[in-house]
Length: 343
Image 1 (cartoon, helix red, strand yellow):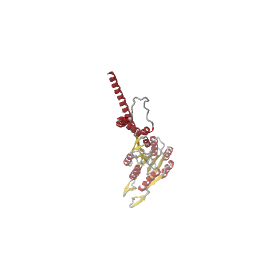
Image 2 (cartoon, rainbow, N blue to C red):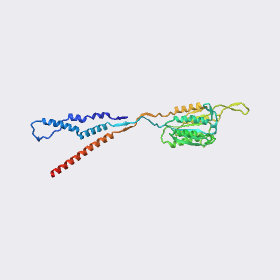
Image 3 (cartoon, helix red, strand yellow):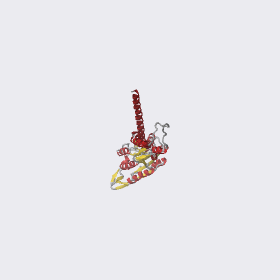
Image 4 (cartoon, rainbow, N blue to C red):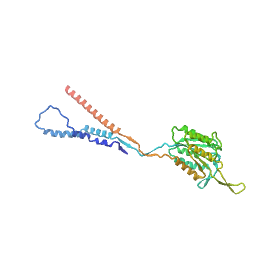
């Protein structure tokens, strides 16, 4: 779309004609060069002079140059299509437990019984897709903690590498404290600003490995402003076959250390959530979306490119061309006079 930044400048278009009509004509020579009995013969000459002026190329070049100058003063510009301004979101780390207990099949996707990790992948992938504008990183932990994906805006890569993770990749035990410490270190190393730093940690057990105690790691996270949301995953009861025949109910989440997970969240200003099935896990990630809302992009921005230099340059070219031709004509005329005088 084309537009004029200062359209009121177009009011100057008739200015040369107004000045010609208002200002007095230039005075001629005071001496009379010729006495004539009547001025009737000059009327036709005056009309002829006006006609010649209209046909004079210099007149039209001057008109075009003036039009271009006024157009340049009005500042023509090209307005681009409406764009969404990208927003600077928060730094969001995801820490997912890959210990052996995540193999427990106490969750369901549709009508299919699945293990805890499979349900986590499905729900967390949807969560990642919704975090537009956030820099997302992925930590996988078991007996050891690994940085699978550093903080990045490439959400598709994070989802792919999460889906490729498998139980036992990082060992059979659970190092919650090491996972938090790794998140603290990576967030501190990769970010220079003081924006929101968030860690969503999902586990189904207690800290059974690692070099740093979970509470000590949480205190360190609190010092650097890393807010932690902890999720305890696992059903509260399920039926299994009995050794003596029949079925019996057990608590598959007996090893879940909810007290420590709650303490971690409270120390860092986050919250602890309990996911006993796929629906509650989906609801937890939805609540995290509400607690840590995605920044909405600012719409309505249109890039503007100023084009005033095109008509301004055109006017200068025309004036320069007209001046050059005028000087050239004077030189040719002067040369002809010299030749005539010499003859």
